[in-house]
Amino acid sequence: MVAEVKYRDLVREIALGEYGFITTKQALAAGVPAVELRKLAARGALINVAYGIYRVPDAPGSPFEQFAEALLRAGDGAYLRGDSVLALFALADVNPRKIRVVAPKRTRAKKPAFMEVSTAPRGAAPHLTRYEGLLAMRVADAILDCRGSIERGRLLEAAREARREGLVTRADYARLQRELRKAPGERGVS
Image 1 (tube, helix red, strand yellow):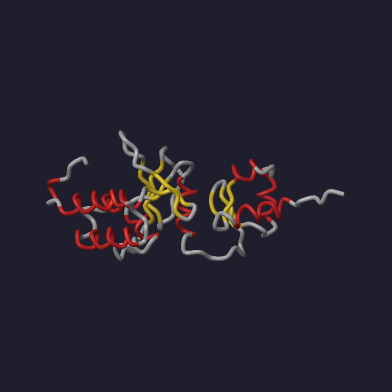
Image 2: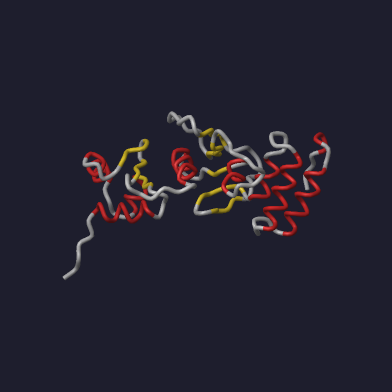
């Protein structure tokens, strides 16, 4: 006899691997109809966070939870940028008031006060990677992205710490040292 998996258990299992969140799209991919998410929310088994985004109420907390929520709210392909990436690793002693996210498409949904969304810049896209399962620009690019908003000394220290932690390669570290030591008006392509 085959044991039947309940939608509730399946949704919970997926959400626990995603900082407690599940989207309608993820549920559909797992064979759970969208209407079942609404039913689970009506019964208190899920919290409707935003359109198409739900949260398991008793999911364990994580320091990355709000970053995950910001990315989900910004939509597919969204990624963390600048000081938000540095905050993931406690680099440069940053504690941004808003989580900065880049969305590939313009989003019209109202965003909560804890996040700031910008559209993807035209031209060459930054190199992206996943940290703790969260799509983000690479740490080296995030450090350079913070020039002008975080003092140079703190960025140089962030680069050293990132190198010690294995978050940037030797080549990236050398590039960071060169770029960060340039005078503010000297930014160039390297």
